Image 1 (tube, rainbow, N blue to C red):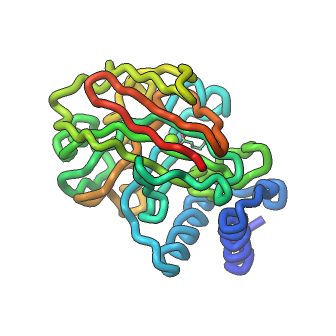
Image 2 (cartoon, protein in one colour):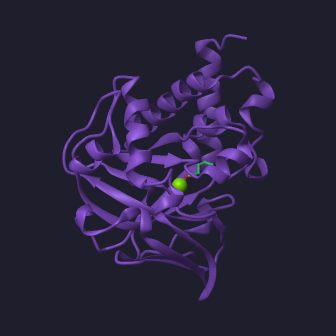
Length: 262
Ligand code: 0L1
Ligand code: MG
């Protein structure tokens, strides 16, 4: 079934309300089983445009489903991208409010800060690294709007790839000072190790994941802008948390990043 403009507006409203009310909802493909991935990116774009119209600002891009393990689990062979807006950016010293979220999970990631614009359809990891000004430790907080965090690929793309919040650590380094694929990471919850990982978990190298995203954006005549923050993908599985929990991710050579959930 082809979605009419009215149906598309209704889907975007549905997802925006679920987020605003912090209420999980039945996935879109239960109602529209023919929803295809490219149409889901159109819906994602409309959702972001609505948020921008309501006052939010674009601050970057995020990669999702970048680990081979997660791709195999979902029976897919490519990553996904979504957008980061200023109202998702949280600081280490300001607690994350659990009441505004549904069933949040934390993901340890390496953030890139773009020093120059980058657009194209045959961009390589090397091209990406030439345009990255700094890398930093980051935590992404994902919070799928769907019931029990269960969805198909088009569902999660339309839902802006489960984006909710993100925190970037204060240590920013030149990318050439680190071997990003070999950066080890330990994420702890309430002082206990919850998960470990390495930069290579992100499609072999975080810059490879970003090159994929740039090429995918390029197909829509979009790209990365100077000053964009890019969350390059999770170094390990996501860890669920709730009010009262504190999360810290420590990265070899890159320092740490943490938050408390109130
Ligand atoms: O950022 C991510 O890797 C998550 C993307 C969406 C999939 C999920 O919500 O687990
Ligand atoms: Mg993520």
